[in-house]
Length: 130
Image (tube, rainbow, N blue to C red; front, side, top):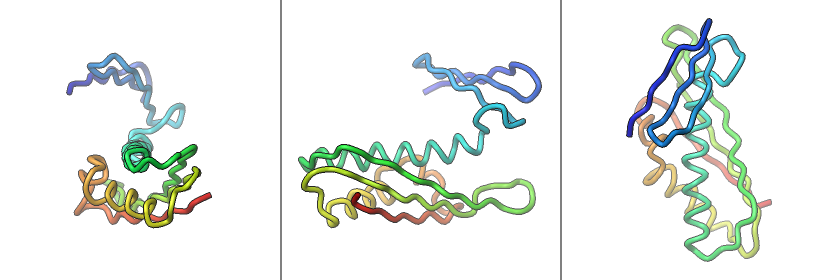
């Protein structure tokens, strides 16, 4: 995997992946910030796992939201100290047990973004069937 980040102007940068996708990030609040992108990446990565695990379990999942809340250190570097991910899942026949297992497997075994942060960031999860 490769990527390139190019300075556009001011504190704005465009990241381009080797698959051709582009993301604009900005340090002045005119686009997603690099830290916001890490938070979103954790939620997206984990949500992919949760949806995939439930689908493989033959559950009819129709919606999945992952609400994320992060705390950062007060002093520079202002790294994440805590991240909480709350999953809201809708579908037919999904059991609380199956959803709990999918969330746990993602956070503890499959989500490479969360696992990369492990040991540095306290990551907690919760979920609800809607």
